[in-house]
Length: 228
Ligand SMILES: C[S@@+](CC[C@H](N)C(=O)[O-])C[C@H]1O[C@@H](n2cnc3c(N)ncnc32)[C@H](O)[C@@H]1O
Image 1 (cartoon, helix red, strand yellow):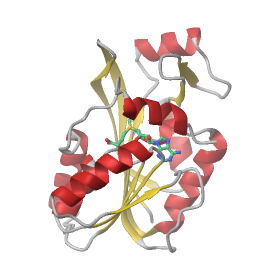
Image 2 (tube, rainbow, N blue to C red):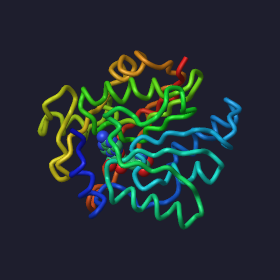
Image 3 (cartoon, rainbow, N blue to C red):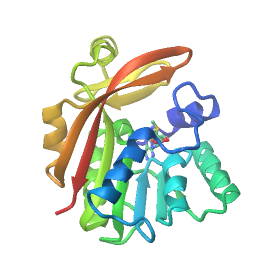
Image 4 (tube, protein in one colour):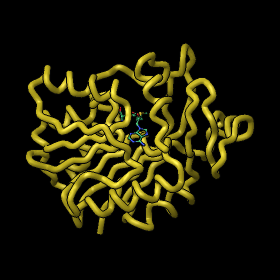
């Protein structure tokens, strides 16, 4: 079951998510890479934003001429995303649906899929659907960018896994948000994603996450992948 209630509460009274409308920095860097190294033009590019939140990445890509579909479980986040798109005169297909269930898209109908810290909320059964559906809907040669919560070298994660473990492997319960999250070691990330995709770059990056009034240092995986 998607963790709709926990995310809905979060968007109604944000403690973790940022209200920023501009794209996430790692996404900006990835788009530069696509343009420069992969010679990708965003005009007409078919993009699927998995767990699109308030549309900060989707709306940016739409402003560059891409054709966007955004899947999101929180109605509150989707309303913000849609309102912002309308205000900016952008056309984006925002859909209220879980990325852990069959996608409403044709086979090979996506050129670029983004998962910006969204699939960590899935359980193992949902993750299998998300992986196989992303693979099915991506065109051959299509790109997949994932930013995911990292287990390695993260002291906050180590404490959470010890003090507040979830039912499945490498999950913890964020008790303030009533949210279960899955973290990945490098080996685990590669094993999970390379079943479906070719990983062209995998970087570990430290970042800061705000929760309530506090700031936590967190590690993330940034994965540049392709369907071959
Ligand atoms: C950390 S936020 C990131 C939002 C957005 N990707 C961004 O970069 O701003 C994670 C998002 O994933 C969404 N999410 C979590 N589980 C989901 C699911 N099963 N299906 C669709 N969206 C989901 C949450 O509602 C939330 O908007």
